[in-house]
Image: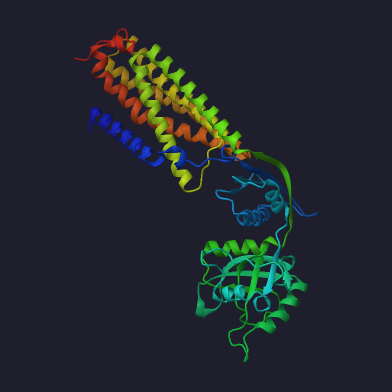
Length: 453
């Protein structure tokens, strides 16, 4: 493939990416998820404090995260997020929450794990639902009404919970959740399973509901007497469901105190005003950059307008895709990162323009100057952007809260900038150097250089 065909292919690839990006993000106000500081709501950072004499570890943080996730789901807030931040913190964001005090009160509670005999639940509708399965018609855990049940065990008796496979040769490879109890729990568990195990009067045995914060996580049937607390819970688990249930069971074994280290309540009006101001600042900055580029680089400066437009389109398209899968929500620090990447995108174009003009002044033809100059400029851009990318990555990995949004958009902007610089900007400069620049070099601020024959 000759160089001209490669340039055409690069330009075509860039245009296809831009078209796909527009298809994904338009209209942006509905396709890109707005974060808490824009939409308004409650943001809380919870710091975990282990029980006295215990060391905080990743397993304990996983249990704490499970408890908080159940709390948040119970609040019914759409687009809520629970994310582990650092080694000992959990970030909870509740966009659009109307009662901040109620939400904070719910988050302050300690997760309560309970074991309940299904037959003793006084609500007949709930019992019938549990007989049919441990999920409601929408696939959500069944909620037990307060006062309709009394647990015979709580989560404090569990010493270990893990995922494994059954030892039963007739059910070879079936995923199970295995748990162990302390002596007190084992004694109660033995007496209970002895009563609930299959017998002449009840050949199928009875169910035990595993309940976390009033929500039934599983309701297995007791299949035999369990004398030592070592229990194997079987069912049609997927690996993810088994891991989640094991985490729920472990949640009651090692209690973690969660303290509020930061609480922010953002009003929706303030958030939208901040969004408008941020977008206004971005547009003013973009206009100033565009004007400078056109005045100083003339035709090449106009080319930079298209480069920045392609960059912005690709950027927004990726954000829309991430929003769709629930992996991104636009925040004000994220907008700051986006504004900063506009300057980075302009820098990439400036490096190529300057190197192109420099090599023309050195006596090279427009065509050779464009090819070698842009190639060297991209190498310089990669070196400079790599330093910024590593710094942003460090911020993303270490920081907590909205600062991670700034680091994420900065890293994504760098990747989009280099993509457009290689596919669109460089190919366009080379393409123009073979035609328009040779006929009207003054239009591109060029002096010297011999036209290719």
